[in-house]
Image 1: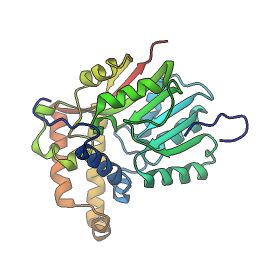
Image 2: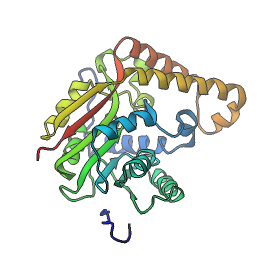
Image 3: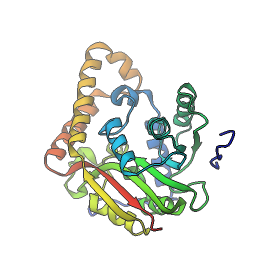
Image 4: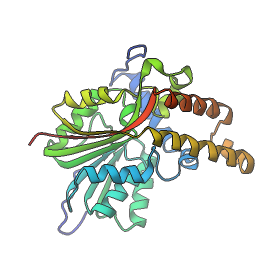
Amino acid sequence: MTGSRETIPSRPGQPRMVSGGPQAEELKACCADAYSQDVVALLLGDSYHPGGLALTRRLADHLDLARDEVVLDVAAGRGTTALLLAREHDVRVAAVDLSSANIALGRGAADAAGLSERIEFAVADAERLPYPDERFDAAVCECAFCTFPDKPTAAAQFARVLRPGGRVGITDVTAAPDRLPPELTGLTAWIACVADARPLDEYAEILGETGLRIRRAERHDAAMTRMIDQIEARLTVLRMTARAKAEALGLDFDRAEPVLAAARSAVADGALGYALMVAEKPA
């Protein structure tokens, strides 16, 4: 950033994974790599989470963002949320992601949008954020907290880098782990943000244990069903018009369909959903 603008320094029934161990590190790298692949954009479009940009805007509104506040976007992907926040709320954003490919794409998108002076991108782990204490006015994390192997450490990092009175906004998959069908408990389901998702009240408890106070929680389960509809529709079109190209990018139609069917059934049964949460660091 240049000129007068300040530069942002750079369950039961399920196995728990410990951050720092090779299994956890390999899982994080696998998820980051998966979400940098073109096949994901092919299926999900620009916004990689249920509710899309409409839900991102709702989250931003509940964060009460003010001009020139400094916002951290954790697991920013290709920068879609960071671009929206900088463009529509005139804030400055530090966007971090574990995938260097995503970070490169995000920088390119910011340059193309004329927002490179308001957004900085960096490769970073949510469980080891490279920023000083009390650095940010707000933080966001969309459809990623559920994939972090060590959620309490990530939540503690959010709390650490927020200034007193700072807000953190999360949209994420919710699940009752002991009720998920087997199709939603393997590595593919973990990458799809399902296998280690938790109930809404457990997310609230994890955030609360860091001292953050929950000030809003909303269910948006219908957004999950709409995303499943969208993916199934795109699969149908791709199967008919570009199957070879999609398979060359790594799309496995035979594996995708049962996972989507299981996800739809789990949403209908109340075992799977989506939620929005906003928490605040006491002033």
